[in-house]
Amino acid sequence: MDLISTIKALDERLADGGVVAFVPTMGNLHAGHLDLVRLARAHGETVVASVFVNPLQFGPHEDFHAYPRTLSEDCAKLEQVGCDVVFAPTVTEMYPTPQQTEILPPPAADELCGAFRPGHFRGVTTVVAKLFNIVQPAAAVFGKKDYQQLFLIRSMVRELNFPVRIVGAETVRAPDGLALSSRNGYLSEAERAEAPRLYRALGEVARALREGDQDIVALEANACRELESHGWRVDYVSIRDPGTLMPPAEPLDQFVVLGAAWLGNARLIDNIEVSLD
Image (cartoon, rainbow, N blue to C red; front, side, top):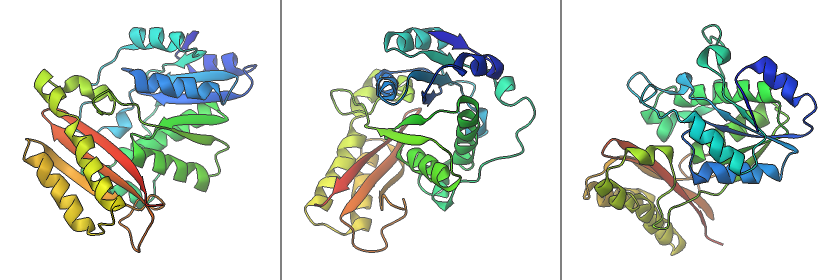
């Protein structure tokens, strides 16, 4: 496995690499990331993973400087699952001058997490567009845990005609249901024991929808109250149309239930797709 930090060296390495499959990450990797790399192997001859903590997607009071940097450990894990190239550029390599050209995502970027993290998804789509142009993959793999991010990247690729197939990977969970996340490391022992409640609360909403309950406002409010009664600070629990990521405008047979909430210093997100068929 090759560890590369410059765009020029990556170009040289991939010149004869054949079909490239790509997994962009911010590092501090867990089993969910490694599943993305395994899935990427089915979509390319050369698998590239990037490790880059992107400053554009962090707000002024968010955890950019505190975000764990664990490149050596990440490389060891990636090598074990058959990654061919790790691209780990510096901030200066990615942004040699202040980034004035940005990708403006669609209005859905201002919903859900975007309402609480202004500019976050503009930073995500901008860095992903840059990485696509640098790596030039045929396919790129993203986890469904970040459902809104996956939706917006698919929209960007479709509308800007990027020649990249976007592959969505199912969320990897701990045995108690907690979605694996780099930010789970911020949880205390007691908070870790409490953390699966977010998934259970979303599951109750999903169950009610499958049983025919269409009172969306009440379902969302009940889930928020359940979490708040156990010490969570809830950003949202929301039932959305998976085709638009907006509130349902008409009766649907497909939904996605999304939630984001704080437990101590950790902001956790999760989602459940619901089919009424």
